[in-house]
Length: 159
Image 1 (cartoon, helix red, strand yellow):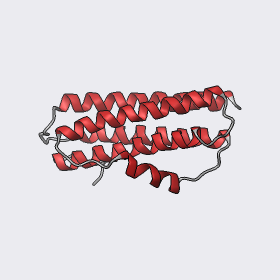
Image 2: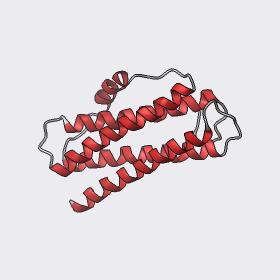
Image 3: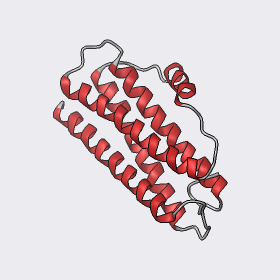
Image 4: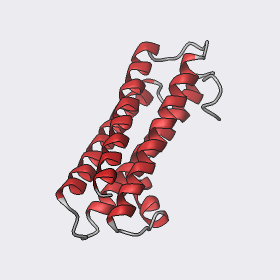
């Protein structure tokens, strides 16, 4: 399954939306992990991490609503978070936290950009309204772009 080709069915769309949910779960889990690590983070970074976690939870909820309308099974966040924590142990210095957050935001943005293109190029009829699907994905993509820009601004301010 790839987002480089048109989405051909509800099943494929549901799986791709679930990948988006996992990306959001990774961003949320990483933000919580960095925030709760006990490091002395400045207020800007704490705010960034809190916002990233809240935004990712919101994105996950929006994607879940789309998946529900497709009547597909979902993977609970509680199953993903421990895997993320175990797999992504990294340095907790400020540069590492910001770099990690930037990678997460850019990865999510690129995924949504590709998924939108795959839906737009598809001739398939989906079990959910195409306009609603594209509006939701476009809004999430724009928020991911804003998140990447915010992290970049913080990184540049620290140089």
